[in-house]
Image 1 (cartoon, rainbow, N blue to C red):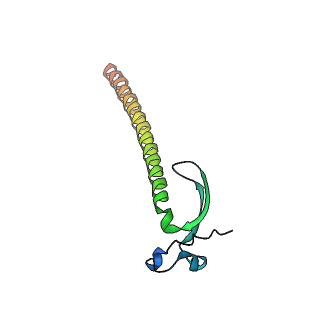
Image 2: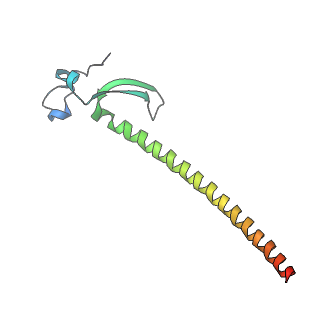
Image 3: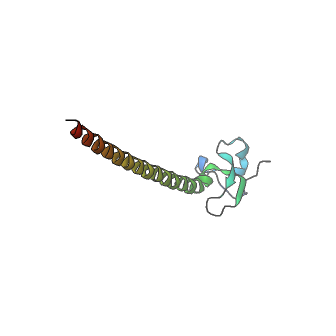
Length: 105
């Protein structure tokens, strides 16, 4: 079921000249958002104007970007540790092979 806008809400798409209630059924900005509110973790399943959802969706987007940045940093740190181990192993191998070559001459 589609929720109706409140009677006093004006439409930003018409520069607030019309009320949302007059044309929300045909409005492409009248959308349903389902999920969890990014600040309260409250379950959301609500119809409203896309313009109304922008601040909440920006908050969610920022949270996702922080999580992605953190995951990338963790991945980078693991790659650096692996590279350091590889360099130590290669260095040790070169030392061992170099020492063996000295004995052969």
